[in-house]
Length: 92
Length: 502
Image 1: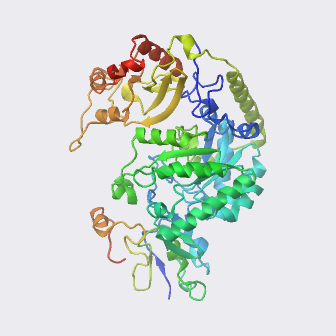
Image 2: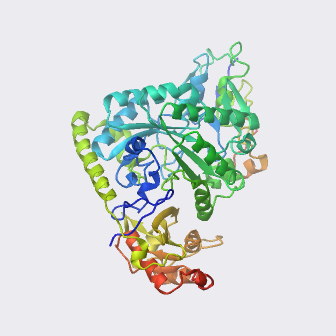
Image 3: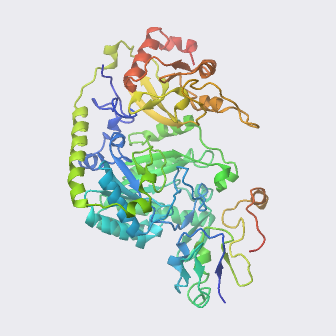
């Protein structure tokens, strides 16, 4: 099991610094997670660290493609506003 | 003719001002500070209003990660045409940043200050931030180092800040009440968890206040930035100002919220109003007390280079820096000469004693008048339609003082028309010219080098007297001359209040 980074990523390095497994590496056009190293932080932390610090909604997904931080969950911007500004997506 | 210049704060000290070479701000806003602090800030453009006309600063964007979310920030932003906090064109590695700093310092000897301000939070990027500081304090000891932070990680890094000779720290403190904080900060990242709402804000405020105290206890200069958010923390900032002053912050910089929907921020999308220039000025006045308020902040980018209000970042992109040969030892010698010359010039200006207002024939009970100036390099220089910002001055019997700068939007088509030919865009409720005139609210006179017919008529209709008779004169002299003219008409006496022009 491993998490993945999507094209929403803005390459801010925040996740790299907090990953307990050194699983995140710089790449173009955005950072990636080494699925051989990622443990979703099991045994280290109660929540996956990359998803806990990531400032961008929809940038981190699980194996099923579900957003760990769905649209509106971090900013509190209501769904109708997100849709109005083209910032809404159901899944990756 | 020299004119009296008064401070933003304590009773006017004699002299000073930068009537010949800048925006004419009051030099003695820092007058209440002990000498050793004044000496530390005299060449720091972000702290000293006087210094910002002569000394330049630069920011290096080595700190992309952040550990909190602010409702006025959107981390997706990356634009080279915009100038505001949090925006950068390229994030640098510490090595690139060091090369850039040495290249800029050699090229622009007036550059005295290197700051790390983002685009995230420098202390959420401790390895990148401190590597940059460490190397620079060794290789370029003549550059002052400073850092800006949201304060969350401050207590754990105060000792490293002290160790690297960073003697200026800016903390952004928007509130001291977690209930207010919850409306500004949706979450923080703390002890391996994302913490939302009031609890997150409570921890942030606690760490900010603790960090502030630890810094001032160690003698490190602290400036506090606050973003004025109408209806959220406007009244509350007066309390913030008192508390941070009591803890030893030496300067409080209240900045207006920037909230445009196209920036994609929570406040932008939710149509949170920005403060009007008048609201900002009133709040700065209310917070002033006997603490220095900073009014010359231009809210610059996290990778800005140059004097405040200008950005020479384009001259120093990494591809250009890579081919520059920098001999920093030689540069330091040149830099020293330039710095000494500027300091000498500033010292000489401080010695000039200016005549009192009553000697100029201004009645002691005359009411103060706000005037907007299209100025450049300390003189009334700009055409009305070309001014990117207006500098607002208050003339009173006590003298002329700088109050604020107000940004405009350019609409002028060319030199010949100067402000004529203004049109409202399709769907807009008012034209740019109307908007710019609204920015001048509260001002009774606007001084510029030239004004076109159309804006002239609209300004008069808005109760603002256009004045193009003082082109290329030093700003403070021009403002005082106009004030004298108004005084001569008797319109400034208290009994004439109801007859006043505005």
